[in-house]
Every structure is written in C-alpha cells, then in structure tokens.
Length: 295
Ligand SMILES: NC(=O)c1ccc[n+]([C@@H]2O[C@H](COP(=O)([O-])OP(=O)(O)OC[C@H]3O[C@@H](n4cnc5c(N)ncnc54)[C@H](OP(=O)(O)O)[C@@H]3O)[C@@H](O)[C@H]2O)c1
Image 1 (tube, rainbow, N blue to C red):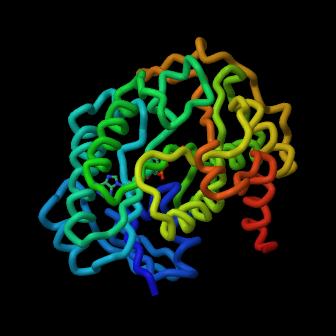
Image 2: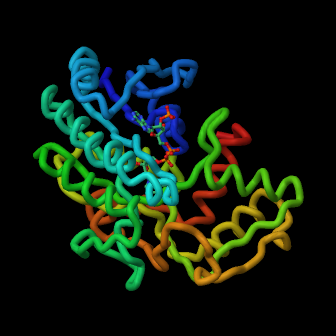
C-alpha cells in the first residue's frame, strides 16, 4: 500500500484530506497536537520549522507522497506576526521540500487563490502572482521553495469542507451560526471558485499517478461571490438565508487587505483529468450527503 505523509493533517483541510485518504492508503497525518486522532491514520507529531527533526521523521516513514498543508493561515495574524508567518510558511515549506527530496517522494503543496491581487479574476497558472497581504506573500514564496524540487506540484485552490471533530472551518462556522439564528455579513463583491475537499482529494489521487509537475489550479467549475456561496449552503442545509447580510469588501475593517476576485481558470486541470470539477451546488450537496452518511 502506498504511503502518504500529510503536514497540517489536523487542520481544517488536512483533517478531511487525512480522513478521505485514510480509507485507501497508509496515511501518516502530521500534527502539533499530541491528543489528535483521525480514523485510519497514524498520527505523527511534527514541527515543520524544526528541519533536522522533520527530515529524520520523514526519512523513517519513507512516504511515496507528501501533501504539504501545514501553514499559518490566519490572514490577520500573518500581518501582525510576520516573522512567525515567514518561519512556518516559507522556511517550513523549504524544510518539507528538503525532506521530500531526501526520500524521493512526490511533493504536493497546497497554495492558494490568494496569491493574486483579485483585480482580474479567472486566473490561469501562467498569471503572475501579486499578493496584497503578508499571508499571500508567504504562500508565493512557499510555492517557489516547493518548485525548487523537480518532483513537486503546487496546487492553487480554495477548498471548503466540514473539517473533522474539534476542527472548525468557514463552512462549519457558517452552519453553526445560522443554526442558532446568528446573522452573518458576507461580501457580494468578493468572488472565488470553491471546491469541496473531497473533490480536491479525488484530483490529488489522479496527481499521484500522473507525471505532471509544476503549478496547477484545482477549483470548482463555478465563479461566485461569498454571499452567493453561503446562500447555497443555507438553502441546501435548510437554514434561514434571511440571516445573511450582504456587504461590500470596502466595508471590511481588518488588518489585512483581501483580494476581490480570485476565481481560478481550471482549463489545464480539465485537459489533464477530464470534466471532474463540480460546481458549488453539487459540491455542497455531496458534502451534505457525506455528513449525513448517505454515501
Ligand atoms: N482553508 C482555505 O480556505 C484555504 C484556501 C486556500 C489555500 N489553503 C491552504 O491549504 C492549507 C490548509 O489550510 P487549512 O484551512 O486547513 O489551515 P488550518 O486549518 O489553519 O490548518 C493549518 C495546519 O497547519 C499546522 N501547522 C501550523 N504550524 C505548524 C508547524 N510549525 N508545524 C507543523 N504543523 C503546523 C496546524 O497544526 P495543528 O492542527 O496541529 O495546530 C494545522 O493543522 C494551507 O496551506 C492553506 O494555505 C487553504
């Protein structure tokens, strides 16, 4: 059975990636939390900023694939704690890349649609990144670190999902808030093309087998605003969409700037893997079926 090592294995995205892959592969899920548990995964304590120890750990496991998801993802915190953000997102990525190279594992790095300034939308892989905040800058630098290794893939994505027990995601926070009758402010003028984590994992499995290296967008087939996306969640989960309060990005009063339209062009991924990229509604319905254990 192929071995997969996942960094950030207990994060919002990583917990679902670990869960979905754990049924089919031997998954080693890297975490900083010694009490974390994920079904069918072996939990491995790691700190990606400790190069020597990380390389030793990964060398002992000798995985076929490394999925690098660990990062400091709080956009405002990255603005306030730049040194920490750099250490985890750039130097940490360098360390993971060195470890992948040492064992000859294929490296898949999770980058973000936030590498772009959001002025154009529907970005292709060839478009030049132009980060508008420090988080995004560190993710761009992380991409460069990962691409220093010839057997690496940078996936640019904007995933959504339900995380795992004790791990909230944007989607679970929305569902929780609406369930208790709380109002939510949502931008009508910030656009993206979200993909359900399960569908991201399906593409990862194709990438394992393919000889593709370099940058690839992995996104849903639909560009929509944050407001439209959450309205679909509310409708499908039978929650009260009157609680959604439409706002504009200029109303945002936060430390870090946010890009306006970071939707992604997935022509390249489609040409490689076929038309397997669902629209937001299909992804949300599938997420609900999985939550309700209908499949
Ligand atoms: N969620 C999104 O909307 C989105 C969009 C685009 C791209 N991405 C990318 O996808 C990846 C996963 O995102 P996410 O939403 O799952 O983030 P998250 O929920 O914040 O999880 C981040 C993970 O990184 C781990 N981590 C942080 N510092 C570490 C360190 N020094 N050593 C080892 N592990 C460390 C954390 O470990 P613990 O759990 O043990 O604390 C956590 O599991 C990130 O690279 C992010 O940039 C996410």
